[in-house]
Image 1: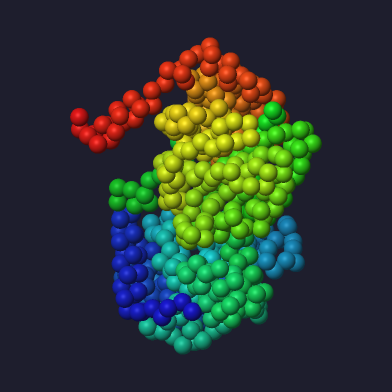
Image 2: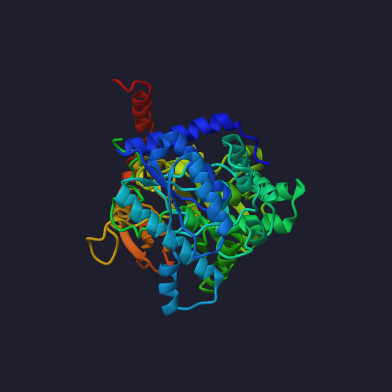
Length: 272
Length: 284
């Protein structure tokens, strides 16, 4: 299993990270999509501590009337954190598109919704002069359980090196309400969807396999010897391999002696 | 003798698939009566390995796929590129090339100059080799270089002084610069070195570069053979895969050395003394 974190120390680090990275860019304001789930709740709570509640805007973006409890939980959390929040129904813009290009694919519809939310976040980012805070955790990033250019899009990501099980520990420490912490994690793309159902194994084991393969650099053989089913280890290895494109900038065809992404290498915090 | 340049691409991180392609290429080269088949740098693994290096590394003395390739080299020689991790040096990874003949490893060269600048990152992941050594190939003395090694002329000199009649460089050189003709501008750099080294070391220079694209980087191809005295004997296509088989006349070394007496008049002991002085007293 990933090691237990010291949540107060991690809180301190991530609060500093959010504050310093945004301040360096000249505006200490952040916004994020608040889904009513665990990850965005933790991110909102960290952002409120880092930037002050007034400098955090939470956009709650349901599709029509689906998931009313999540909307309620999100609105309640925003009030409790005293951050600004707005609820925006994305159904009109999603429906406008699918009325022209209908599909029965839940994945296509779900990805479209994630990207509509992204487009709203980035529009508001420019209007508010605030940066989009990412909420993808390490588990999701490693297995590619996110929509590229959708929920994965952000200016900075405070949570990307915490496994889901570690996010849970941090959530408890930050006082995220039990109603949110107790929910089965879901991407919320359709009713009844749960992460664990879709990924095919519980987070505890998924994180244990990921931690072994990635952090400890264990081999497939060693993971199986440690008691994980070969089928599960193979599945996780395949998920990692097949999702590298989601974790990287797209390849640029190198033609010249100095190419963006290849050998024009400057730090992200250049001059800041 | 006939030399086959296996200018090709590799499947990144898939040793099994690449081994299968090696076997096919060996069979094809054999049909074309090749005596030596040269594969590019890291031909068994692909080039842009980074963290993948440790997953594809193998010990050539025990790895079954490597041994299978060796077993197909009866009566024929091959140069194969691979990521080396010896049982005796666990956790240390070398960018290596093996010269195989008659199902035996005759020589292994570990890349000495690991490019770590601009787009290159090798020294972050691999250990550097520490020697340039010639060996007895069935057709005479030969030496191996891997890609950037070739561009350090001291490396060529070491092989030349070691008696090489043939300098074999395996490469995964990305092309850069598109302001020239139908080739990357950097291809000229390799050809210039090939021409100069073959001219002044009066030896054959075999250069085998790969093709294909990895993570946006295009490998330039343009493998070549220069004969002793700077004669271009063959050049493979730029960018496209090709199994180029070229007949070479080994007596050309003797001919060139009768004409140009560089080798006869060479004074490695003077060079060595000068180098020793330079290395010991860099401030002189």
